[in-house]
Length: 278
Length: 268
Image (cartoon, rainbow over all chains, first blue to last red; front, top):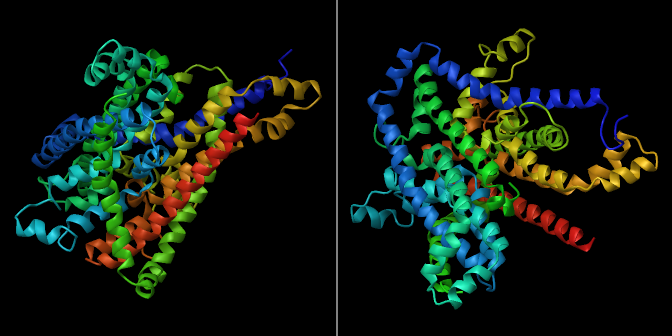
């Protein structure tokens, strides 16, 4: 006899099948297609596509962008979490909402905001032009737009974690004579390192994959301001499908590595991430 | 606790320069248009068609995701089956996969030469380059929002109320509808709203599969891009201001649902 709080075997099987079928159709099939399209014309065509000078330039630009944005957001995200989770001050809830704000702005609107600041008709455009500083349609704008869309990830991971861990350990360290930086380095950081790594993974994935915001500010100059996702679009619009899917498959591989690392973190360090419900 | 001045200063500096200043640029610029001109460019026939598509498709997709997201969360929490951990990890793929990659993959699948598109085309059904294509892309993007919001709430539900209901003679379906669903409704609504909010602003995954014809398959973010390409900064700014206003209203609504749910739970 089955328990009164579960379903008959047949219903269970049907629901599982339906859920897995939907996951297969909506999630797994697109992933599968990226790799089959990329390798559809053979490994040679794939290798040629990803070693084109423009493709290499886009890979370099994407790596450069992530290398600049991730440490920057790590630092500011950790600072924000320290301020919010370890102190009481007025307007704290408002500050947390403001930190989350970039998540609710459409990527295209995010890109537009920086056009209105740094573009030729923007607030700082004429001044920048007079001083020969190029931000718009160049690497700085790509980095700034990426930093905007990825800012909340680290902070949003660390704030609930550091709040749940409380302040007792830090207070003990301070009482024993440690200064603020020593306390952070030897007490707080070991406690939050897995959460921080989790935030870094998400930041990196979004930084390398961001499309809308970067698309608006980049100017699409081949070999100069095209990141990998933008290069995928250019190749696709030229009907170079093998090339587009070859570059896309590198990004899809990165997404799989991110997912795998994230899953391992969730299994191994469940307790250290527990405050966030992972 | 030391370091408040330094860390709060850094946070405020960053927020001011990177978030508030750019937002102010959009808001001040759109106020600079004057109400009559603003209304003219923000609510032109083409812009209205774009909003209708962006909001309509996001609404339908969020509805589909609420249904299947609940199903997937239910199966992941309640049942054991081989490959469960893999399935659970895969749910997050739309968070990790760059939107442009998703866009070209979905187009390859649903175009009339694709694995799903071809059989559908023989039945006379066309998904790619139509409004249905937009919904499809938003279903992909929004699924994890519902699953990840509902899953923890479902896992925390005690079995005692279900047992009580069963003892009193309720069937499984009645228990689900009248006991479980009211418990998970706030989380489901939050997931729905999150998926909707994300769908309204989504760009990368949609533009490849949408067809992008003004008045029929052009989403609002694409219209902003189109106007920027024609150096129509006023039009782009006005539409962006409308979208920002809607995003903030949605954000406020989501916060309200979560706050009410928290007080309700604490009150119990």
